[in-house]
Image 1 (cartoon, rainbow, N blue to C red):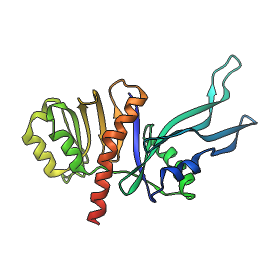
Image 2 (cartoon, helix red, strand yellow; image 1 turned 45 degrees about the vertical axis):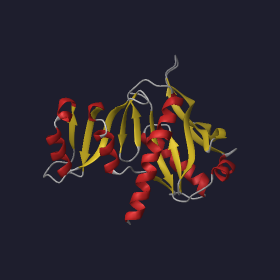
Image 3 (cartoon, rainbow, N blue to C red; image 1 turned 180 degrees about the horizontal axis):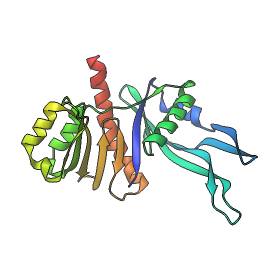
Image 4 (cartoon, rainbow, N blue to C red; image 1 turned 90 degrees about the vertical axis):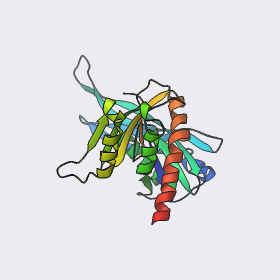
Amino acid sequence: MGLAAKVFRLEERISIEVAAEKLRGWRAQRVESRGGEEYALLDEVSSLSVEDGLLRGEFLEDRLVTLPSREGPRPAVATLRTPFALLEAEEETILVVMAKKLRANRVASKLGEILLARPGGVFEAMIDPDQLRALHEANPESTRVIYFDQVDLPNVNVMALYGSALADTSTYQEYLRHGQVWYVVFHDAQYGLTVGVARNCVVTSFTRVDEEKFFRYVIERIVPLASESGRRLRRAR
């Protein structure tokens, strides 16, 4: 599978300049034991840069892994590199983490603790189901898969449309009557990418693409959807 990213929002708005000050030079060391030996592991924020209102950096995490050797399995320190970006979108601060869901959640939580000096200040950004519907309905022939959740049919949790079934508008409308769009896989001709986008702002590229292009895609195409959805939800409350 290709690259993945997830979009979050901070509970409190924080300027890019202040965020850069808090993140620059941050590091934390911890010790783990394995086989009677202790290993010093380091987490740190690296490669910070600010350009065009975008704060970019990398979160580096040391992890203890087990490697095979002639003498048998032995522990070794491996470093995970996770790119991220912060930007101000309308009334909120958005965080984009370039990783699959579980790792993105972990890194986002840690960055939130650094920025807000407390846990629990980072939330999943959400895309309104109508926004996902619009992605499909604007160009139905480009859609590959649609998943629906919150289904009101007995013993049915999720429904899906694939391939030729997507061309059947009556089936699509029937599914909409019983559920909400949760996940869409579609080809974005403007960027030349086939991507999957979930309502909780998990984005996956099914096209081989370099990291920089995918990062820009998420910033330019997905973040605006999440920001607009956030404003709608807050107005509805």
